[in-house]
Length: 282
Length: 283
Image 1 (cartoon, rainbow over the protein chains, first blue to last red):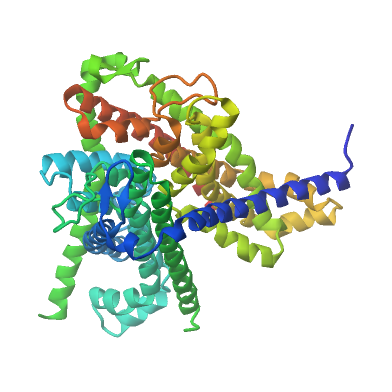
Image 2: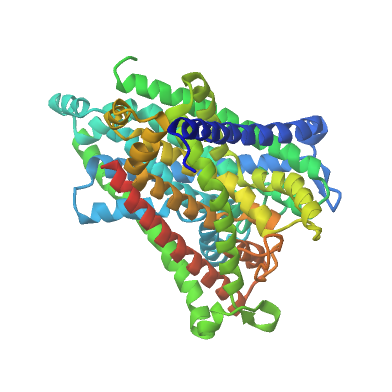
């Protein structure tokens, strides 16, 4: 039996709508489910007490929030200069030769390497070889390595999007290359660069595997970045696999989802501004 | 300090930063291979054996290779039709107002932490699967495959959508002018033209799937055995590393690094092929 083109069209449209709608439904279901079970747990007890440990998962997430802030701050302090400096080199200074090509390909390929491989590396070099043991510092260094290819790529792309005429104008006025870069190209590319940085913070919030093997699992309040700790994401994992406190795990998951939502909205707004600026409207 | 001196210093500085980034990335590969090498040397082909009993010095990772492959295949079997449908929906079918809502939703799926997917899988999916199969907790390659499918959905969807959009609009207009239905134009003109991009999307999604770790540990059961049905537990290469590295020493630790080497090589191969296809569409 051969279906008429009109009937096939109807069936195909039905299937395509189903696929599109179900993707949105899956998202909504996950978000609504986590929020519905997590939000009732929210309260001062949850946010301002330390996890008590044990199978019942007593306590809240205060020390986990502090560890996460420590972790992200340390990561960004290491990552930002390295990533942006490298991107400036690639975008403005690198000669167009085989070595530059090699660096670009290396960066591109490493962007796809699984988190746990970075974790193994961080474990071998930071935890063991450099003797930082399981610590926020070891986790932050590992995380910086993981996010580095992504930050280099987004920053370089943002700088490449700045029109050539900007550079030529600056050079024609007698600026050195560095003056041109810092006073013309970087300011023009700034919304794009900041978007990249914010997405890295989002990545750091969401990341778990490479931290699981480098930060140790201690749930106490860290006093410096040489202490071990858990990020929020890692804490969700521990709660879900080692305790019966699934509601607390879902509440921590709800915190994560809200952070990711905020980060998403911020980057949306920034990229709108960046596009407007590159089109000369702002 | 004169601006010319500043310029010269800055040039050296960014060159230094650029090269150190590159060296860090090279170092990662070197370190993993160096730490894994003793296991290859000591164990030889028994590293690819079927028994993983660290306490009895048996370090065969065949079950984990199969575990990773099975989970990835289940995920792709679910994710490919769903993401392709979703990509066509976003690129061609959805009315603008629906698209404005659906697109950010798919992007948001990409940002949600993998532990959250694992958690929802653990709380919602496992009891359902346990009910259907009547086996234990429900931890299974099926559960892992479903969770993974949702996680690769946004990757495959957005790259496929981009490549469908990249097809010049007169291709489709020509087909419509010849009397093709919308679906015929999509099926016989748009999709073939976008094929390299769609293949790239699937391959890059596969790379992401094989590397997923924490969500897999949460729903797969982590037994290093060959799964005998979709309801059977298993262990992935990634899970093997994450679960055991903190208490491993000697050959055991080296065998875990060797697991990392195998994973690294697999992902590199997959992603290189994916990037080649991706570049082909970019042109």
